[in-house]
Image (tube, rainbow, N blue to C red; front, top):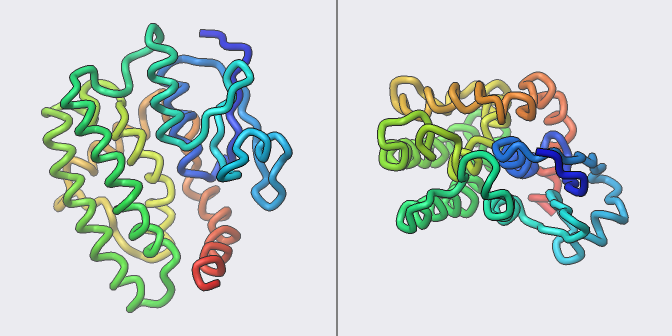
Length: 231
């Protein structure tokens, strides 16, 4: 589906930018990806998101939509006739999907971020437990939401898949850098297999950064996150 006036402002290592990129792929919407240098934000970004001044920003027909999950919902509602529905059609299932997406952003991501920037064996060990406990909780959510199918969204990638799946690249980097295991085949078998299926999906594999490339980016990004956290 050709869309001549769809632009996405983002940065390739960003987990949150991955969300609208996957959603646009799910809906087969063509778009221009405008790479932002976060050390020097463009005038277009500042104009398009004057409140938060953050990526991602979707620009469609000259109008800006901000915040990653808000953008995903917009894409789902705007291109209803292209590709599968991202949010469930059933109102209850839709509410549950939004609940778990909020949990991922509000509860799980902050503790995962602490693990990603942890330094020293004791700090890593202390940060690992709440992250893993959260993944065990999401394992149960996966069983309930997927109803025995491949994804949280059923047969196709859905809203919660996008909300959580965008972190898989950085989870692999964190495992590698901190010598830990997050998705355990024995303890979280559902999520373990889900992660494989998610990364192999055609809407994901072209936008999921390679682990080695992310690891190189992490050498620059993680010290900045640590500095901001301590300031």
